[in-house]
Image (cartoon, rainbow, N blue to C red; front, side, top):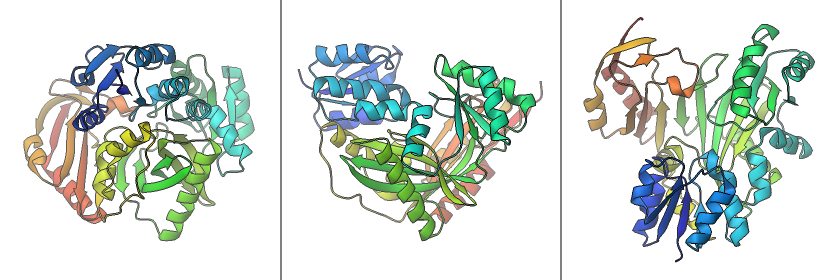
Length: 395
């Protein structure tokens, strides 16, 4: 039996499973969560740890798949590359998969290629982290080398908070290194793109508004970035250079870059589409480019023509809610009924406790708006934030 193996079958992978089935493809999906919705939607579902390359390869061989892919999840990047290489299928090279999932190796590759990045140290112990922080002699970012989604990432202004920051990063990193990096002040942007073989295709550049240190979480993201054309060109050039330095081929790209006083500097590269509906819904809304179809094409080694361009805008917003127990939520139905809302998700309900915003798990909801331009999308967001009410009571 031939078919497409989706490594990951959670909510973010469901659009790909549905699209592949709509093409008439047989879909095999695996996920470590037996309740993952994509396991039921697929023609064949298997419960397996998507971080385990050998387990994923066993499933691929069981069904004699002729394509493998991993949509918008860092956890399955290495396994997808491993399966592709072992079975001679199109995909991200294993050498690149290792680099994009190891932030220490990634920084070393940036340095070797002479790309603008930041000073960094890989640390195996708290003592090494203390030495690294002293050598940086200024604010630092401490993070796990294998993390994603801002888990375990902290801003460290002075040595008094270094121990807690290292502990948070170590909890995520496990046996891998903890990075201590020189903090880059500035505004973060993100690049969404695709490598068709070795051809770089820029899809969209976005601008981020983040929380103040120490946790550095995204609060709002603008699509597309309103920056000048010259800055867009410099950002795109650096992003392409990073993808090539890491040897990325046959994969979507999500690249984070800091705009500093001296120009764009690399934060990190992911050889996958951005999560949280960005790759599957927001980028297509803004560009007119069918990212899910493109991901399936990549899995089969097919490259479409250059991405179409359309003038559209979107905003992804994570409303801030005062800490406490939620006593009332209103405005949800009105928001979801507005055609200018791309999606609206609630992560907590009445009775749940809202913690101070320290990680993505502390977010209460997300609103994505759309319009013919960024300004129109902002107007819809202003309306939505005026309608939404989430009341909390201190505990």
